[in-house]
Length: 455
Ligand SMILES: Cc1cc2nc3c(=O)[nH]c(=O)nc-3n(C[C@H](O)[C@H](O)[C@H](O)COP(=O)(O)OP(=O)(O)OC[C@H]3O[C@@H](n4cnc5c(N)ncnc54)[C@H](O)[C@@H]3O)c2cc1C
Image (cartoon, rainbow, N blue to C red; front, side, top):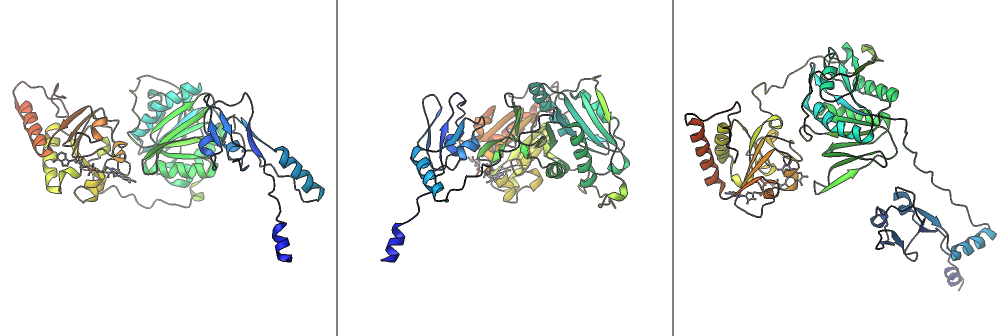
């Protein structure tokens, strides 16, 4: 009986409050609706949220998600009565309000691009980033700046000006001769702490990935790796950083609302390299390196160059690519792609299926887990066009697809599509191109392409 009594006297649920809309603040962004874990929010015709208070559990998720603080918590009359009752029994503790996330430091200004270099030669991705950086800086109405680290790199600021930088921060010191994480990361951190940029862009190369991660960690800021698109939300002065997520099945746009600088890395060839402007000038700001060689733990004992040497072909830099997929059926059939590539002065690449099957080496793979390419011509042979492949080649200037399946998704990005059996189409194409090349009077340019033969 006593046990039964205890069960009957179960404590009432502690009031947690309900969410409600503050009139006139909602901008109709609709972020709260999918953010509610109990489906208590629905959209009205005007795209303003309607909150079902019977369902609302007072979890506050919508209040935290709302970018314009248009939602607040309140207690219903029934909850207020219960709170009074609990208070009178000494059982009510006032809830501790969670501290709002720190607002971003608005004193940060300017878009910065890292000029990656080796032996004084800048990586092309740096100039590609200055191209997109120019648009970002224009939208934010701030300066586009570059920063250069190394030894004997005094010539690089001039090159950066020609690609659009207005200011270049330069640390030229023997300690920075070869890349090591510690001195490079600390140099960038010192520059950022002193000059406070609001956005920092780096190439998603081996070096860039290492450096960006180290810098973001020390500065305790966010870094979005491998972005495929960058944009500015002008109203909130936020860098919208878009990249593939969930195996490339969705594109996610990531914001860093509370920390500065906003950091993003972009793979080579994703952004278009601008044309350099001869004679462009700007300001060079020289800064010292605040480290001595003896402070650095890692020492460079020997440099071993890539043994594949000069003969090695980097598909990421190729102007013409003839790419084969599972439709090639076997490694021996890549010969017909090599023949076509030879006539065009191009290089053979492959889809992941062909690489996984062992038909082509990994460094020839195009796509999300391979290389991003942006050639003048990309010929896809027996490649279906899965999203993970497309993200690696869809920005090519001219895409030609050969596939026997007219529904293949590759045709959605192709400028020219040939529906047919590649074992007939490719040799015929090669034969015809050879005829044109060997015909007296045909004009052949440096790349081996015949002018006017694109279609
Ligand atoms: C996390 C993740 C990362 C990935 N990363 C990559 C990546 O980096 N790169 C990549 O490519 N894939 C990647 N993939 C794999 C991707 O999803 C696809 O499986 C792959 O791209 C398919 O390769 P494919 O087009 O060669 O083969 P399939 O999809 O099998 O397509 C073969 C095509 O050949 C055509 N075909 C067959 N015979 C002929 C013929 N005789 N003539 C003409 N056409 C013919 C068929 O109609 C078909 O369209 C990734 C997947 C995941 C999950």
